[in-house]
Length: 94
Length: 258
Image (cartoon, rainbow over the protein chains, first blue to last red):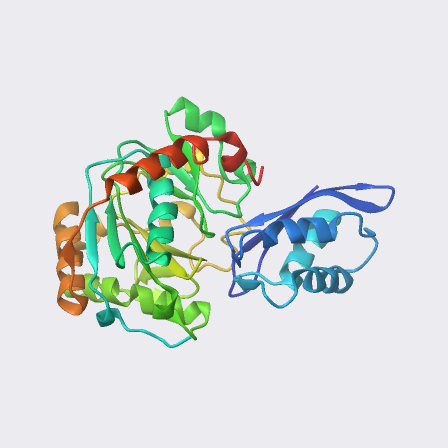
């Protein structure tokens, strides 16, 4: 499943994932945004892995924000934007 | 961290003969680290490409961004750089690419947007003096009334900042769109709807040869901040060649975000 979200005033955020037993699995977040340090991308993928697919984007964003802590700097991307991309992957437009 | 200024340094220029894409990726890593370690003065490096390629950003999905089969068919290489940002389509002579390597103190206390604007200021000045109406366009573009001219990307490593920019000189958008997958979502809040029209090259805007524009850029930098001729040291080249092979030509790096 694949979702994309262009953050207003930011960059493109993409989420590729599967759902197994109601949980997110194989989560891959990508895009043309900026993250420092670059290892933070793995923290995001790991934080999303296994979360309930039924959770809403606010809950997903809170988990991402907690996983990243205060040392990660983001430009053109945010936990909320990533959560929207995840939500779009889960609910592809009809 | 106290902020330093452009003119606190003795800047060096590197403008070497054409080099392959993986070596350019490796040189960015090595030269950034050399500046961080204070073994090299802050440097402006102008790139010359020896072959065509797609360069994808550190956080982009290889599969989502590039049609690998089409790239192979057209003999276009695929490499991933160490900075974030978007994919670029490179054919020798069709872009002007350069890197700035500086101590992070040069952008101390700035947020990302301020540091992009600050690092782009000299080149915007150079292009304006060539008669092009250009400005810094957040987050990381240089734009003109006719569209985007250039994209920048930054990364920070060990106390140094790398700021590199690719400007379109004369781009073959048809070929570009055969190898790059540019989705509708990406264009959703852009003023223009056609990907082919998103980039307006310097050639049509200036009528100048690529080398003349590069000369002007170098002259502008030299006038503003001073710039002495430099070169890649043998040990830097050796390390970069090793990294070009072991890291930047490897599927594990290029496909690190599959």
